[in-house]
Length: 612
Image 1 (cartoon, rainbow, N blue to C red):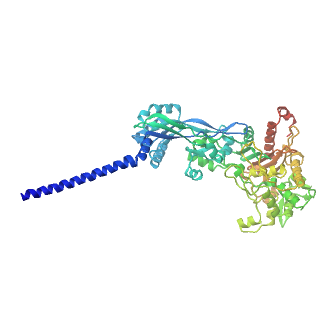
Image 2 (image 1 turned 180 degrees about the vertical axis):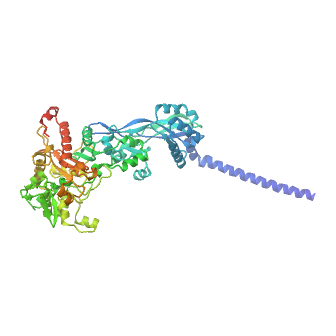
C-alpha cells in the first residue's frame, strides 16, 4: 500500500509539471499571436501589400537641345536592349551562353558581365547589350519562356545630328560613375552628361523620374496596373549657337588644328565656337573601347580638347592694342608720337628684331597697329612698364576665366613681378617687358579670352560674359573697363587700318558687303627661338619646318566697322602667318555671317560688292 501511494504521488507531480509546461507553451503562443495579429498588424499588412504591389521607376525623357533657330543638336531615339536579373536566372551559365549566341557577344564581354554580376546585388538588373538589332531582339523575345530573368525592353539613346561639328559645345552622355553620384547625389537612369552643355545643364535636362504601381500574384505575374505617375520630362535647352554658321566655321577650319569664336559683343552670346579636329559624340554616348580612347588622348592635334576654352597660346601681336591703350590711358605717349623702325631694336646689349627685316621707318601708334611694327611696341612696352601692362591685361579679362557656362575653362597667364617671383623665385627683367609688349614670353590667353577682349574694344569698353544660352532676355549690364572713349577710338582706327589700308597686315582679307567692313588685327607667334646664325643665313620659312615648329597664326576682329555687333577670334596652331592663314578664315566667316544677317536683297547683291 505504501509503495502504491509513493508511485501515485510521483505520477501526480509529473502530471502537474507537464500541465504547467503546456500552460506556459499556450501562454507563449497566445502572446505571440497577440503580438503578430494586434501589435504588429499594421506592419505586416504593409509587407503583404508590398508583396502584392510591384513598384518600378519610369525614366523621364531627356530634354532636347537646339540651336538658336530650333535646329536639333541633341535628341532622343529608340534603342533595343536586353537586361538580366541574376537571381531570377535558374542556370546563369546556360543563360549567358544562350545570350552570347543570339546577341553575338564576345568572350571578353561575357567575362566582363560575369564580373559585374559577381560584384553587384543579385536582384539588380544588369544590362547585357544595347542597340540590339531587330532580328536578335525578336529571337530573344521568342526564347523568353526558356530564359528566366532575361528582359528585352525598348529604351532611349542620345543622338547628336551634327556629330563632330558641335561635339565640344554640346558634349555627350555616358555611364554614371561614383564621382557623378558624389557630385550630384542620386541620378535617375544609367547615363549622365559627361561634357559640354550635356554636363553643364544636366540637372535641367534629366527631368524627374516617374513611378508605376502594378498588382502581382504569388508567382510575380502582373495582374493589373494600379497607378502610374509619368514623372516630369527634362527641360529643352536653346543654345545661342547658329548651327549654319557653326558648320561653315568648322568646314573653313578643316585640315588645321585650332579654334574660332564668334560672339555678340553686347549680349556675349556665342554664335559659333569651333575646335578642330573634333570627334563624334555619338560614338562616345555608346561607349568607346580603351584602345580608341588612349589613341585620341595621345593624338598630336588633341581632338578631345576644346581649344576655344582650354587651349592656351601667346596672343602675339593681337595683344598690342592693350599695350597701346595702357600708354594712352596713363598719358605716357600721344597717338601721333613717332618711333623709327630700322628692323632691329637694341636694348641692354640684346637685339630684338621686327618681323620686317628692313624696318618700317617712322611709325605713329595707328600706323604701328596697322603694320604691326614690333619695334614701335618694344619701345612702347619699356615706356609703359610691366606693371601697367599687367594691370591693363587683367582689366580686359586676361588671367581669369571668362565665366562661360562650360566646365574646364583655363585662365591663361598674365605675367608680372609678383607672378615671376612666385613661379620662378626670380626677379623680373626689363627684357621680359620688351617681349611681353608684342604678346609673347610668359603671356598666355585662350581664344575665347581674345574674343572677349575684341568685344570690349568694339563695344566701348564693356567686359561681357560669354554665354551658350539663347535666353531671349535683355543681357545683364556688363561692367565697364573704364577706358577713355578718345583713346579707344585710336585703337579702333588702328584696327580698321590693319584690315582696310594697303600697308595693313590683313589688307588681303578686307571685305565690303552692303557698305560694311571689318576691323581687326593679325598675330603671328613664334614657338621656337631663331638663332643669329639662322638670321644671317636666312630664316627658314614655315613651309619647310616640321608642323610642331611652325608659328601659330592668329586674328581678332569685329564687324561692322562703324557700328560693331560681332567679334571674332581665330587661332590656328602652327598655321604660319596670321595674315596669310587666320585672317582669310576670319574674313570668310564674317562674310558668311553678314550675308546671313542681311535682307534677301542685300544678300543677293553681296557677291558683286565683296572684295578680297
